[in-house]
Length: 172
Image 1: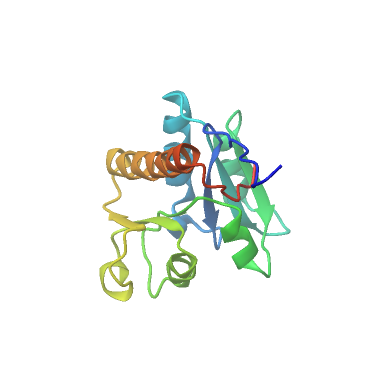
Image 2: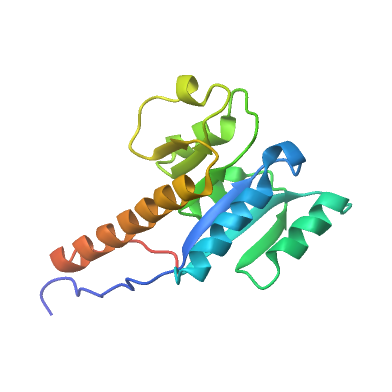
């Protein structure tokens, strides 16, 4: 009756990856799908949301949907408010073969979201040093390591809050 009641939170939530951007071969979306496929096959509870599907389905979009079958991957149309999309996800994937000034990485970084991106273009120069950005060469094993670190970080934060009885706002 005196103080606030502590409610435990789930430790095993689905880790939500996000690709948001243009659907184009240069954006290398099959790599993101393969990353999630590998993590799921290893037993990790994760999903991938792909935002940016055009209203008219292209051959590439059909190929991506076929590759993503039987995986926790959902396709969405483009949204005008990407901030709300970032906030619903844990980690943003940017596996592009080529990038200039990557606004998605900058936006996600400003929201303290973890970003895993390919080491191309201005990736090493445009972003301030931050704990939440992994810049990796386009090697699946390197991206798997970065993704596992990101997922472990989330679980560590939840455990800490559980042990210290600190309430967390969690979108389940």
